[in-house]
Image (cartoon, rainbow, N blue to C red; front, side, top):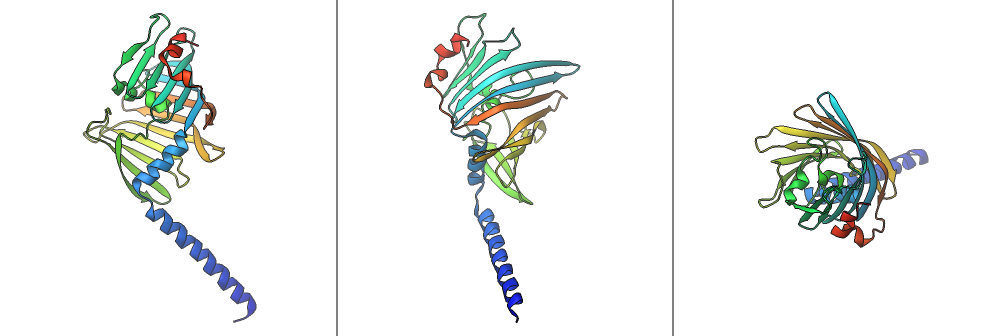
Length: 247
């Protein structure tokens, strides 16, 4: 064998070894490991962004702007910026406690934690979606592969405050979420979220456009503006006092 063939054979062997190692590594990952990596990519230790929302219900549409802060799976604040009629109102999640505040009421009111899964405007994203908490520890996970993608089935744990029968989640090999199907106990898809316009940030790939289609035909478009991850957040933001300050 001449020198050129030896070099080519060696290069081919190295390439094959790398491909085998990569494939073996992917096959060794468990469903929970994929969920953890997707969650770390989507949620981070902390998250902050302004979110522009367009809600379409029948022939009507509404526009909102909200500012969102979250820390892990237990702390979250959503503050309405627009329209003017809703500005200053918001939601606070602190562990198992959930609060809603409207300036007209002047005082925050407690909500059941199950409200996290409810569509915020009667359709479109839920509170937990805006807080990037969809992939919570309330689910058990199973997984299969579809090409390079991971297909996850997330089933609520028995006592979890979740209204769905299960979630079907497609995750890319870089652990960016591609889509989520929200399925009822009878197997019917109630809503589908499609993720696109991915932004390459340090340590993560994040979708900045999320389109939610409801079974009843309603639709919402969610755009993330200047998303930030793993930034310092003042603990006072996650208090009822700050929620009631309305600013």
